[in-house]
Image 1 (cartoon, helix red, strand yellow):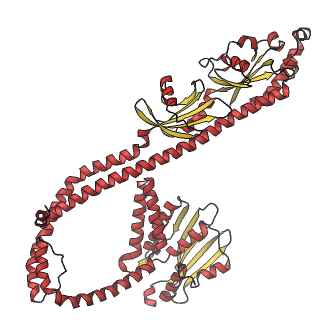
Image 2 (cartoon, helix red, strand yellow):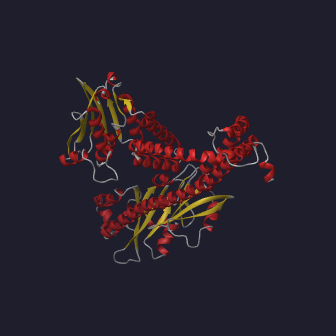
Image 3 (cartoon, rainbow, N blue to C red):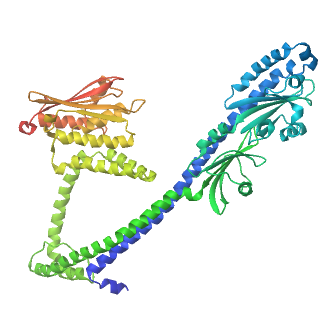
Length: 592
């Protein structure tokens, strides 16, 4: 097989290699991307669920604690009030006594009404107060002895219980949940003076649960020990069998604010659980597993669709390219044979059994004669390349490029393709203007465009906190100047002015005007400003060789190109901002 492939014409090798590379690259990319995206999606969803459980349960615990605390205060302060113990004869003999006691009770209950999310207050009393004047949110306790909450308080040594549907236990008629608080007799704690029912509308509970819906298919349930659903936020209410199936899958070591995976109706779910202190409530959140992986599934599908769409074009283009490549190779075989007579300007080719092998066989005859020329050419080329690299290093800010690429990497991790496209486009335009085809001279218009791209890139990093305003008359845009003159100054305004503010946001204004032979460019920022020592240090050659040459570099280039009467000056006030003034000349190349 190896010999067969080696003996194929180069055009077929090229076609085959391209197809293998494309298919293999897409396959590896799809598998790796899907795996890591799925892992990240699961981790992010689990973290979000954990935080949601903590926040929602803390809010529920806060509400139940406030209600219990308020009911305790009421009982401890007013358990011995006369409306709990006054005999029936007193109300008949003194008709106004009920009105007095009712006013006192209303006043005492007012503090409970101030508790957040409390709707109404009910009292069930054993006293004559309720028997003489029944109703008006005051009821006879003996009429509710058949209720579950009454049995719970009477049979257990507990002061509290919760009732769905209020004291009537009728959630269909009364969509409320009530904290039933025992009011013991001050003289005999085993005897009941009555109960206090603090009622909360279920809609208030639902509003607390609503923010816990992390996604559209997330279901949030608040259930009690009897497996009753107190409140929920979901597309549909589950049946009892589904909740029982879910409870059976709770881990043995299931603790508050924990999560696990469960199977419900043959579907996998991420389930979050938390018990609510001060109550018999349990918070349960379910998220479909397929929704967690939906993003990775969409990307995997889009990759496969893209592959099948471009594959015919890859085959066609590869075939055409292979023909275009093989034809000149065949021509070169003939030409290289002529090189044996003394034409040594031919590139080295690796040995193989195809057409390239023929080129290599002919080329070996000339290797001895080419070695000296290649060594000399390599030395000269290396020196030239070093000079080009030195020039580029002066123009390109490695920290800015590193930060921008790091930002693009973070955007890629977050899947923000729109911002990635914007960042790459702006970076490409920024460096196109920076390089300027190797020419050092540019126009003010291109230099300002260079600044616009730079600020756009920075705004991608700093969430559009930098506002750039350019007020330059159109007739001045053709002014000739050397390139990368303004960017170091704008960079200095951003990093040492605006980003030093507490708000980390601000404005940069650029203006220009002409007076005689001089041309002025002004850059203002509303940053933290500088003192006199800092302004003087900016224009001095830095002692630290690791950086800080930006402003000094611009100042030196201005002096060299325009003369010592031109340069950079600063005006600044601490806490107000900074103004940079560049003084240049027209037609600077004629003055050098």
